[in-house]
Image (cartoon, rainbow, N blue to C red; front, side):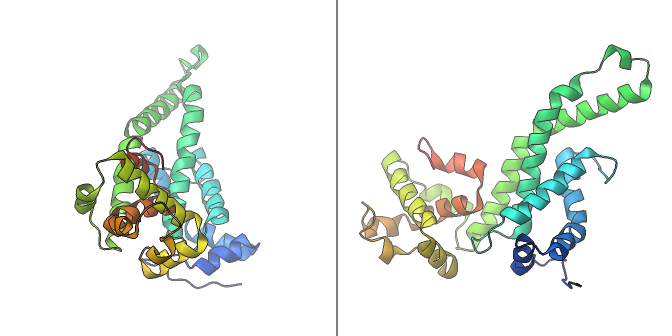
Length: 245
């Protein structure tokens, strides 16, 4: 089976991912092979050093994460596959670093005197520490950039979102209830994704919130809904205030 896809600048076709999910090994192998440079790039950036297949265990972790992303991706919910896969790879590498950090920091006395082994462990320790120190800042920065791009699709800017965000907890809670109601209702969610509008008519009567209030909070509700769809934990933490989302 031969698959021809121009990958540069183009999203991964959903049907290829779906076929891989349904057991098409050719499609799965195609995705793993074609996007190996992408996987290595994400891994190197996450590790803050160059990594290569066969020499670094992190590549194996990233490949398994990419394979996991193929199985868990759900087309039609607004997220592109590579954006989703990038988040999965980064999070699995994060878990890997957290598991291995204590082990890597242990340099046995027998290791001293063997310069190569000691230097290797010290380099690994330094890489882990650098990653740990920059992890939260980098994740937040990348999430903000991606979130801003998604907001632009709905003609909302980050500056505007800051200005319109409700100051009172009750108002935030009402908006969150509306966003979660749409997110959990497949028909309403499909309407939102197709028309880039809230299903206000359908929501009217289903929530203890007036349509006028929903219309007034429309942009903030859209922002919350995008956070649910894209699973952006840092943005979620910022928007939720003292309430849950």
